[in-house]
Structure formats: structure tokens, C-alpha cells
Image (tube, rainbow, N blue to C red; front, side, top):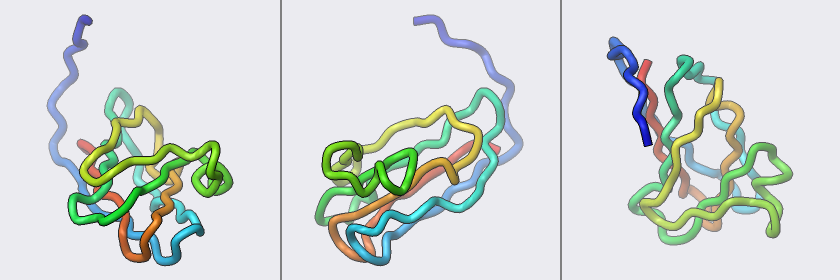
Length: 102
């Protein structure tokens, strides 16, 4: 696989998105992602159960359509804004860490 060179970014941002009520997906806050860069989302290392991601509230809550992630696992999403991600959790207060170069 050929890697494309990208210019260095002046900064990066990180945060967390906890879920208040299990079974009710929550949208991540708006965070613009620069062209050519990815939002990295990871199930928090101290979670005790699964985290579920989806492109919509309905998908993140759907037992058949949501994407499950166990503790410490995650993915890179090449999207325009973090608010395109919905997060659900099996346990209240658990959630994801995220980061992106700015």
C-alpha cells in the first residue's frame, strides 16, 4: 500500500464522549476534520462492556446494524465532522475517546 505524504498539522484535539443512558445513542459534538485526515475513535480502556457506533442514531441503537467495539478497540473514520458519529454503550457513563489532527 502506498502512503500519501500529508503536511504536518499545527495542533491536534482530543476528548471523550460518555453515554448517559444505555440504549439511547448520543451524537458526538461538532468537530471539523481537515481534508485528508481521520477522526480516531476508541472504546475507552476502562470500559467494562461494549460500545456501539453508527452513522445515525437508529443505526447505533440497532442490535443488527450497530458496530460493536470492546475495551480499547476502535477505528479511524475519514469523515468531515465528528458529529457524523453516534455512540451507544451497554453501561451508563462508558463511552469513547477520540482525537484528530487540526
